[in-house]
Amino acid sequence: MHEDNNILSERKKLILKAIIDAHIENGEPVGSKFLMQTKQIAYSSATIRNEMAELEDMGYLEQPHTSAGRIPSEMGYRFYVNSLVDRYNLTQNEIAELKQMLKVKQVEVDTILQSAMQLASRLTNYTAMALKPRQMRILVDRYELMRLDECTLVLIMVIGQTIKTKHIRSQIPVTQEAGIRLAVVLNEKATGKTAEEFTMPLLMEMEAMMGEYEFLVAPVMKGICETITSFDGGEIRFDGINRLLSYPEYYDMERLKELLALFERKDDLLRILSEETGVNMSADEKVQIYIGRENLVKIMDNSTLIFKTIRHQGIPVGAIGIIGPTRMDYKRVIAMVDSLTKGVSNILAEGDITPGLPDGNK
Image (tube, rainbow, N blue to C red; front, side):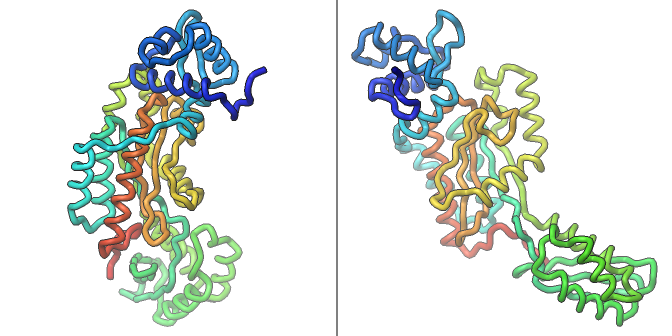
């Protein structure tokens, strides 16, 4: 009888870890002879082969060719990451580079994330990403209106400590009274609401309140939605995309083209990752790891995404991540991402920075 998938014997754990470590290092299937000679596992070749066969039956290993050795499955990698991966201690050179980046007094979140991303790619030799997640609830605190001429209004929106403006033009002349009434209606009905809450019944109610000036509601609400959407602050950048070409997992040009196309469709990836970092991030703020088909995007089913959210005063303001093959140097990447994000968090805590919100007209 095989052990339960979640309860491996110490011998199976030892063999599974040795196989994954070896495969990460050289990219080739691993056989029993290699484990005995190189990993110095003190069991007979027959015993190791039996254990490898059982690990394959249990789903932790795969055999790409009939007479070849084994490679880890996604399930094997997941068990490895959760239970077997060693703690990685950064080298003196890596520590020095981290300190060099972190000691530079930068005042903008964008600049800090950009520097951290470039360093992460260089130190790991994988593709790195820097994410500023979309703000999930952009709310306008107050509206004001200024009449430029008889057909042009300036809509002033106060969002936190930022002020945004939008010019509203009308083909019908707008009186001073109309502007005053519109400001009253907006502050009564449209403050403290997200763009999704601007429903048709609400617009009809506002039009009824505006009376003869109802024609102003539609263009003004359109302008508010456009401003909120553009103000969400979301952005995603990549560095070292060409590093993917170093790994045989990406030699299939069609799959590589699809992955590169995903990097170009930044809005799709930004939306998915913003939801993940902003909403579903666990309270203990651990490094997040998505292996193969665990990834949120199908084309990344042969890749691993490792990232960690950066928070400032409890609010998600960004994330640093690494994208590479499932045969990734997990212990090193996890340690690097963890150290980088902690360092960036310290910079934000020490500096006079308001992250996550772009500068507006004060």
